[in-house]
Length: 238
Ligand code: DX5
Ligand code: ZN
Image (cartoon, rainbow, N blue to C red; front, side):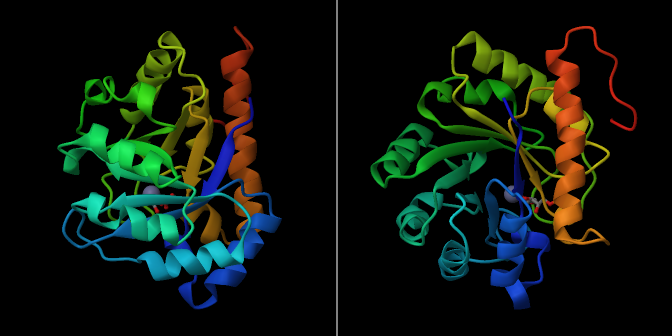
């Protein structure tokens, strides 16, 4: 099982967005992660369906839309029409989460659910069989470039165990926030299958391609530590 890398355009140069998305795709990005913030659920305001359409037009890669907004049900069809392949909603703002997930299915997108760092994993248990993606937030959402919250690693391990126990190994286990060359090994070693990385890719001093290469290498080293039972972790990981 390979680890997928999903660069977050939040840290991209928005004046050259299409170019930056193409550059990430050419450098081997697996998905493009689009962070939508409303200034209510999170303290920042970012982009909406129009910019999502521009990302869709710039790449054939799966477009992975992370909705950090209140009342996400009102906007699901707009993001589906904009070309999202995956849409992820926050559990904290969905009182009728099962219905929200059904609505995403009907719109033809892969449904995802995410949890803030303070939200218990148990809140996911009832809907895990219904989703295609479960996202562990490893920072408090709102901004790129924040530090990884160390307790996330145990939460990732517990989610991996929950997915394995239920035979839900087709569900993508995504991790978002503070993933970089120093943390990607730990995150993938704990069982993540998709790593979101913003600053580590788009703000890498040697460019997007080098950023992706280094995050992927760290993730693969971490994963090898997971699958080769008893193997020593590779140097420079963690
Ligand atoms: C945080 C966003 C993340 C963010 C990740 O609110 O959901 O996707 O862009 O950025 P880095 O990788 O810089 O922490
Ligand atoms: Zn995100």
